[in-house]
Amino acid sequence: MNRKKLFALMADKGLTQADLADKAGLSRTAIYGVMTKGRKPTPPTLGKIAKALGVKPSELLDM
Image (cartoon, rainbow, N blue to C red; front, side, top):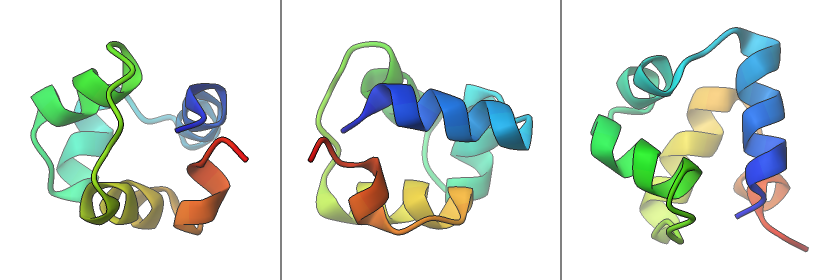
């Protein structure tokens, strides 16, 4: 996952990690793991994060 892109999208939308977790229907621990620990999200989790940010999942991947 491209964490720089994730942080930039969150900043653009004024979202905190807690906001993103709530909006994506995920635990705060899951968001924290992806953002801070660099954990690779599962495809369903990636999809939820992307949907919450209004982007395609592929836009969050390191490609």
